[in-house]
Length: 348
Ligand SMILES: *[C@@H]1O[C@H](CO)[C@@H](O)[C@H](O)[C@H]1NC(C)=O
Ligand SMILES: [Zn+2]
Ligand SMILES: [Zn+2]
Image (cartoon, rainbow, N blue to C red):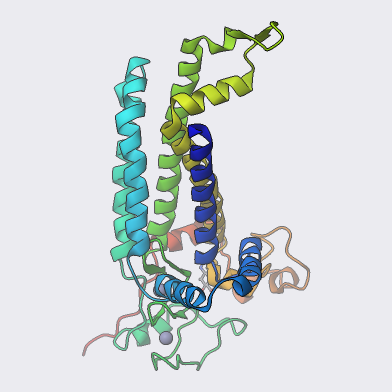
């Protein structure tokens, strides 16, 4: 009974996570969003009107208005994982002679991550303001493909610098706009993409490290229990060796919470590692997610070996003149870590 209940909770939590992730990355059509929208369409005839209204309202509040919900959720999940780690895994590991140094790494990573998390939330992503717009207009040249000169934002009533976009959630234009991230309740733009990248990598490191320590602990627990050499008498009176399934069930029943946490950590790790790699790729080829969604494959051949022949730069040998997106991977990365600042007007 306990095993099944736990397993059901486990599945529900994992599915909730997947749905949340799909909804929050709704800027583009991922396979997840397609499935999600399909499910909504299938389910909606069977749900009462008020429930539909309520869920629409909740989704609007959560995803189309600024709110700190996901920051709290983030802290809650992290708190749960660290509490579990500290109260159960830590003790076991100490018994199994894991050194204090390796057991303190998760806490160090937590501290590092919190700094980047805080910076992502607090740093201005590069809001286009009346005062700065003149300088911001000069940061990037217009490519006349995605960004055209002379366009202004109807809401902010300011000229739109190249690579900027109006964020509907925050209701402002942001320079070198990447995307709006609900987990930090802020846009990711010119001035905080670096913190965002570092934040992603530190969360991955955190989840990966705790998962490894936990897996190591479980492995030693199985070795100690002697289950691998154990056998049982089946209903025909025959002696049977306890197989891997037996071990898994034993672990589930002996350490239910730890197994639950390990599953969650592995899920988070792979999800975020993929996301972090995608963002590193974008940083290396000098693109924002916004530009990437708008023009897939439009990256110069130098950076992108599979680009199609109708790309500008493959027909222009000296692409550095005609094509701005790529001046070498290191320089692109440099621009993320020390973003170009708006040109200041001299006061005289
Ligand atoms: C990145 O691309 C922009 C144009 O979108 C260009 O102005 C800028 O110089 C590029 N940066 C690097 C480091 O190549
Ligand atoms: Zn705007
Ligand atoms: Zn925003």
